[in-house]
Length: 245
Image (cartoon, rainbow, N blue to C red; front, side, top):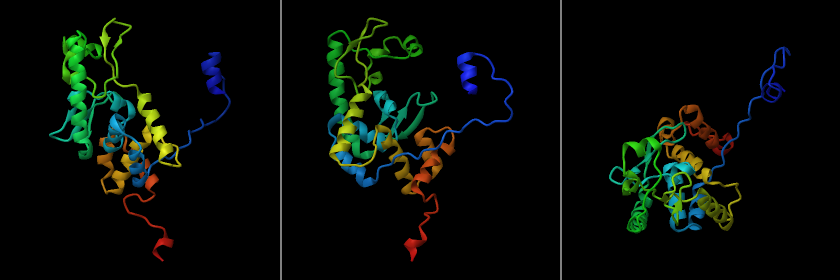
């Protein structure tokens, strides 16, 4: 009612006495078991398996994965740089060993696409306006290209330039949806569930909550703490009394 008067009618409701705004209920995230992750990955292949592997193996959000640039990958340090993540913050997270060779092979193929675009007189990629002004010509450099380029170039409606954007997020979303069905996983699984599973499984392996907070890019550790509720174990490995009889 208060919101209706304030935002719709544009006038105050007046004094209605003491009241408290309703709080949003907390919902625990959906998390896959390790076995379910394995079953899901068996139903994915190619670039979709690689992207899903980074969501789960690095704790990336969907769009963070899609917007990865070639220069954001550090194979020597086994790190990924996430640029302008949620809250417009940069962070560093882990690059899983299991997918490094597949990622290197993928980058060779992506480089061939970029080289072909350059030969055709194209080969540019979107850069934020400030970067585009500061680094003239950087939009055609290999390091700034998207790790997961779109299958074809398109015309930027604002500039008229032919550019190759990143893959649309719906490509992976649809692939995961179909894979979940084939894997017979009876949970409501989205791409973000892989990030939830990353955090939960890291806790199960014994990593401390602060480390996981940094890898996920959470501003407040209380946001990360929700995964201790999913575990229902916390840091003490609490067991039901029935299981110790």
